[in-house]
Image 1: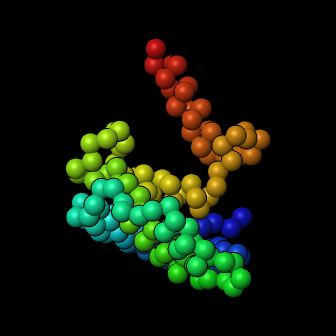
Image 2: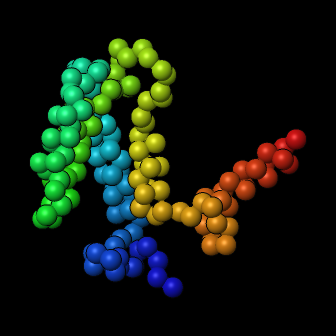
Length: 149
């Protein structure tokens, strides 16, 4: 049976070979540092910018209509950068230090990593028929709570 250390991702053709625990640890540190760095940049940009956007619905419609006609493909990098710019400039930033509206918890490195893992693996949480880890972890947690009483 293939393992993470010797498998190849057939969807992308990229080798996923890992050469031991040191490489795995280094790549994890690199991923976490990249996430931390990106989050620090976003937090700084949000803290230094406006809380509420200065944009009209028509401006958003015009932008979307001129950039997304679906007549020709666009690169993932271009679309991602454009969406990030729209989110950065056209939404109310509830994580801004001077935002005192409805309480919304802040973003953490752990929440970004968790969302990324869920997006990558797409666990089928509604089905116990597959050997899905999250429902099993949830069951384990529930059992521990029951037996502690």
